[in-house]
Image (cartoon, rainbow, N blue to C red; front, side):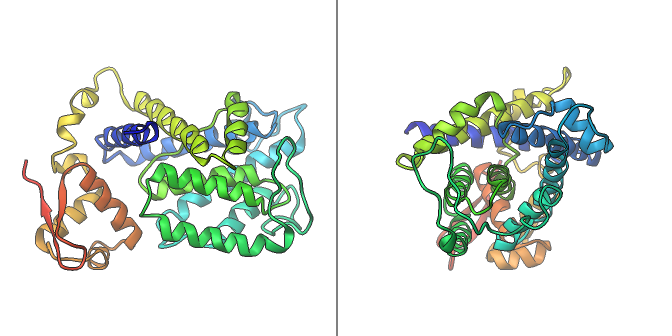
Length: 330
């Protein structure tokens, strides 16, 4: 097993450990989303030179206050990014990623900075300082973005979620479709891909800016370097979240390797339990039939089935067309 595959396995294992805490109370889910709303907004803006500290970012986006002595644009970037962050949660359950979703992310982030350019592809040539490689020509941006969205939708269920997220980020940055804000949108798209595939938010701290830029530049000839960097950030963020979730009296991490393999309803999300119940009653159901029965989208079913299979709760016996589902005995 090569180094990247080992990291994918570690990320999958961390994801299983996090799954052992499900279902989470509504208030816990809300507080976690707000925690990452501040953390991702701060870190993503800091990578681009925003001067707001993390505590100042929290005050700006949650209390609507301004920080004396800080540029107005820095405030706009914080508020705009928080709005774009909220938006990615609204599209995690969509059947497909659409070009308009990407335009909306930029529009939300950039609206207060430059309303005329927000949500519109650039019409001028730009250069990336410190890079030896040119970005997409203005005349090719629209076609390249359509190709990117098509690639994502065709590969969302074919490659590992970490590779998917890293590659989406990388390919988007190489196109550089907007006059400004490309890095912020790229990281939002990366996290959208992770969320859509059952993973948590991944944070790139500003202290790693040099490694981040280096890995992106190197990815022009060796894309695995950037994927490796993102895999490290996914794992590090997962471990941070596991530490947050574990309190002094919590023993779930000590027993998770055993319990996560069992079809215990207390460890399953509502969707996971619904799918498990459906395949128990209808082992011959297709993904489309499971989606209709459970009242969710097909991508959600695909993600949920993948999670249940990785936990060794259900198995697919035979082909996709003629096979059936099997619930693994305890």
